[in-house]
Length: 188
Image (tube, rainbow, N blue to C red):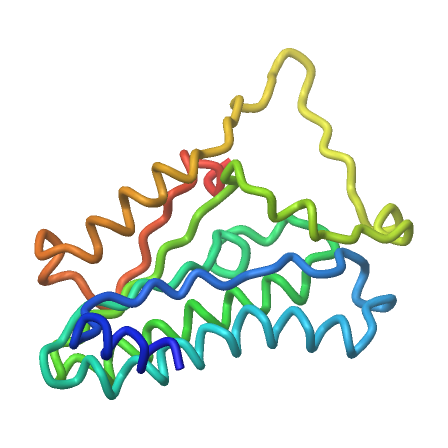
């Protein structure tokens, strides 16, 4: 319905920003219910699939840009304990974006995946952390005299600038790639 409405209002769909995602329940796998697993994957991964699927018929004639928000969790950072459903959904988005880029290239539809790290958003407000999480957390100990790099979360505006670039003609030869926007967080 959203794509049909866009066509009625604008006559075309040029850019799709599939920005779905919830943390869901953060707990050890042993305590994660199948319903909680399904809810996270359905919202994040199926939501992205449906958004892209229903945009394709409206983009095939003139091409365009699809940007999928994945995460460093699910692509190159796997240190967030208790987030197996979230990381799996984000890994699925990552792979789906690559396959979509290959399949849709013949229609001049570019598909890229952005992988943010910590960004100042309200996603944590809908996140449920269970008491069992303490069972799998591993405290990080740094050698005496050393200290970790200080990491500051990114700002939503920084992500928006990246999305704007990928939606624009300035990125006309970029497709099937992932772009990390995490201030080196995933490299620590």
